[in-house]
Image (cartoon, rainbow, N blue to C red; front, side, top):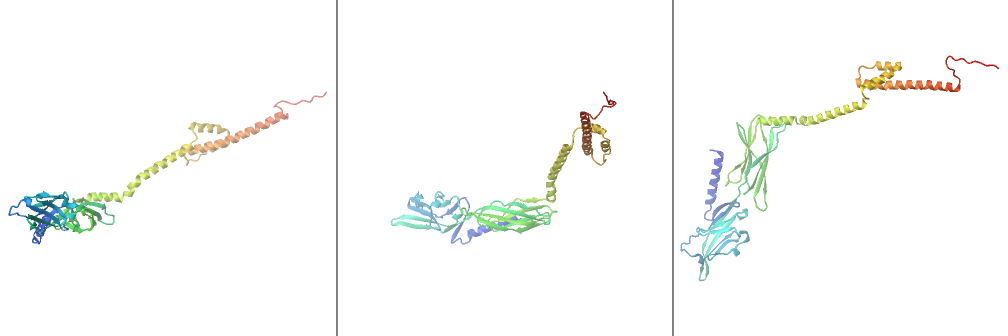
Length: 364
């Protein structure tokens, strides 16, 4: 028999049990949160007494009035504030309907019927307690992944959550299913109760061993109470192929992240080198050649230009040639200026005679 069918049958049997156990002392009434509960009175009225002669009312276990029908008329002023606007009477079967049931409505209720007599009200019916059970269905559990497995472990962390249920749940577990096996793992539940609605929220987490070579389906299962059907989440499926792909990205994550950074660094370095070379370049090639032609007057400068080092780049050699040639030109210019200055001085002092002219002495 299917596991789900077994649990539903178990729940039905338990409901039958609670309805028929201690039936003499109380009748069990079951209602769900925010829905409607029926609180029967079981007054048969064999004498067909008119409502004008009857006073009917319900009280809770704290003697608070839920509803009162006084000689055929409702008396809302006698109803406790927590029940006002929430009740209605089905006069055909003498059943009080309590609407918008809350968790705090659970407990015992009594029905009283009195008849107006010559000497006052006479009790003609007092119903044995109706005990109201209130349930709230938990939401379908939701399973989610907390973290993927690490390099040194096949364990994967999962969490599961379900909300707005009552009463407090009994058990939460994870079911790990593969092609060849099904394993169940109990989870440690964290339970929180809302102070206003009194509903429970539950969550649980667990680290599950997941084989890298197998396709896996993982379920979260919540057992609220024996009166409610077990709830199961949608499967969280993990296949070996996708998990291996994720692991590949995990192993090479640093490299993938670093590649764009390395590319940017390389582009920046190359750009700086190009800019630096442009700053060192003296000008067009013909300028370099013109300087070299002017430097032919000095034999030593010419030899320096011709004896270039072959291992160095053309740009570096051109720069060196320009620098050396400029230095030699400065030397030549200084030599010419010195020679010219010396000739001008001799001519001014009259100590220098033009070439081919002889001086003659004249005697009187």
